Length: 110
Length: 114
Image 1 (spheres, rainbow over the protein chains, first blue to last red):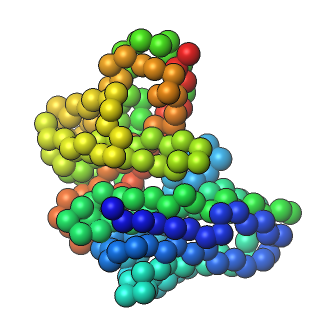
Image 2 (cartoon, one colour):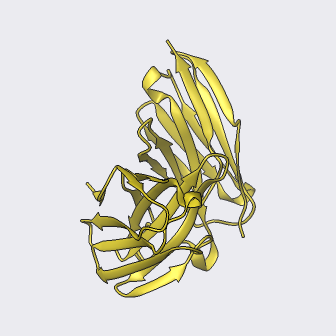
Image 3 (cartoon, one colour):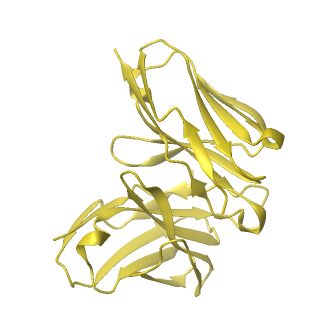
């Protein structure tokens, strides 16, 4: 099956810093989502982005499907951005099923 | 807004008990999913359903069964709970054959089997 690798596994920032999280995948995809898991375990949808670029406030994402990677940008980070960020992909005939990466644990210190 | 709800946030059960985890979505989605999340292993798909009474095994179906009698409700059943089923269980839903396959998740159920 498709492989999903996220980097870095851990990231520590000071409030106000910018960061870039990366997601590499091993096959072509027609579904790619970024999630933020809050401290209570809820997965919050950030972006549905199988290709192209999207922005939502301080967050933006870019997927270059031909090169099999996606990037999540967080600008002017806040302590509430802390948590685990997951990339998940769907491919081929199973594009409605998601395969998750292991996540990036982001800690934003005040 | 899409809303996916799960019957319990925390659940403690004894080994050997039959356990039901319920999930309800309010968006008339065809697809529904059950995942479990474990430290170091990430999220793994247990079962999914693409229509009422239809189901398919995911990556780790052993020890679980599912039921989908109504479109909005998808149940995960642990026939005889074991300690290795202690985990966080997450339900999700998505539309079928649409321009977007975006999945939406419920708040999760932390199950402890003692």
